[in-house]
Length: 152
Length: 152
DNA sequence: AGTCGATAGTTGCATGTGTAACTGTTTTGT
DNA sequence: ACAAAACAGTTACACATGCAACTATCGACT
Image (cartoon, rainbow over all chains, first blue to last red; front, side, top):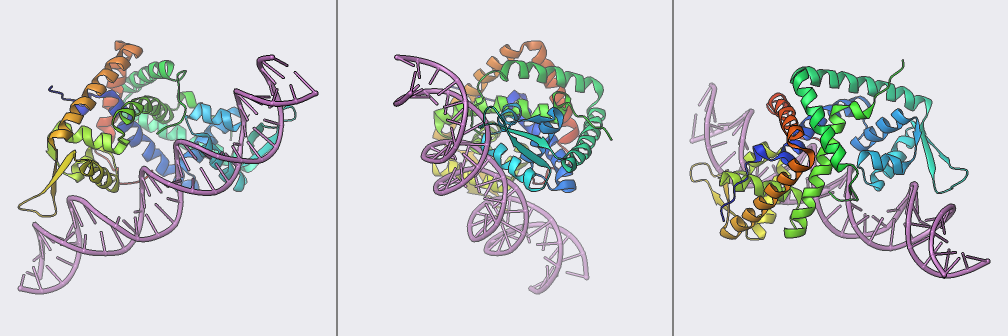
């Protein structure tokens, strides 16, 4: 049984590689600026966008394991960038939101992200960027709903 | 300074998420079938395709840190799937290749990968798949050459 | 020849991460 | 009303990972 598998044509592989190349470069920026980890950046991004939310929701949106979220939240709280508030009706739930200083940091991070994205779009060209977005949208539509329990 | 950053439109984030969703699902397959880790799968894939190569080249092609490659190679060797041979001229270099049983496993893995890709293409549709490939090609062209030393 | 720097690959150590088990709470089913 | 299952979130432990330091080898320059 002959079997060849050209990796240059294997979509999952290309997807992982491209995402690593791009996100590493971006991670280097925010790590240098604020010393935050990748889970912390993700938590920041979701929390900044939504205003307030819960740890579970952050995990759902970001594909992060709940322990990762728990630790990221603890780290941001320790730095004074995030505050927790117990839900009045359901005391299992913790509502999370950015503090004033957290919001200020988020504003800077968001600006960095926008700059980075603009540079990326310019580097690869608008045509390619649009194609990439269309492809990603299709993947998101087909895969997001499905399982994503906890692996690696 | 008002700053919003809709994550649904942030390309690096979408890229990471899509790659995680896809590669997790695929990883579940080969882990269930052969109990190999992700670095081991990557090493298998490159080695199977090239026939023989070196650890450094595997790292270069896969964006993996050299220690990751070193451990993956050791693991595959331990399972009897990979053999090493010192270079006659330059004794720093180790030539790696799959053993007969390693090649047999690779054949199965390659078949799994082809099936998975075919299913993925069908799920998202050929149009979206083509768009995704075009976008990824642009990213690869612009980012591969550049730095990719070692972070996370 | 001999020293310095570069390269291939491995290993010690500290950190990051997932699994499973846990606490505390709410919901469901009877 | 009450036991059992479900859920939000945290923690202990084992394992995976990156960085730095190491060995061993080679090439370049004096």
